[in-house]
Length: 196
Image 1 (cartoon, rainbow, N blue to C red):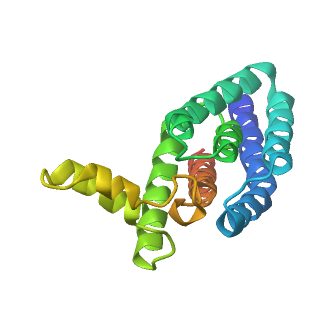
Image 2: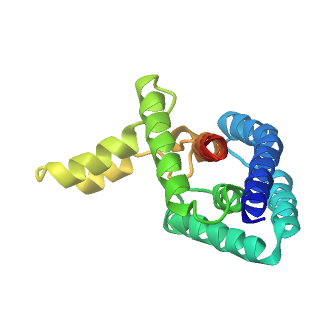
């Protein structure tokens, strides 16, 4: 009887991961493309993702729902400081909250690391292809490394901080990180189901 319960649990988790993967993929593609093109994430899409995935988590059970909400809050905290410094938008924070709910309990660190790595690759790629203005990066690097640099004069020459030319579309990195996270969860679940 115990073997039946274990295998039933794996089937339930496997189907939950497949459902999350199927529901989240079009949402991630839409938000990633939208953020890259407009540098804005619409409230309807980000909050819609929160609502749908909260409903899915609640369908699993109250414990899973509350653990998913906590994961979402921890993920959103990751972008709180950049949000207050105007380096990230409110849409990014809401999308990261929804991504934490989608990733589910126990995946906070994995998700944050994957999103950070995707963001680094995206920023370096955009700098390499001159898709983003590197003036702020150069200014801050010179402030840290060059004691002869005139900080005030350099600051006057910078574009405004909320200029779109200076912003990296972090929604793309969130989408890529969550997609990789869900893919790894699904592969790990399939591998453990095969081991039984």
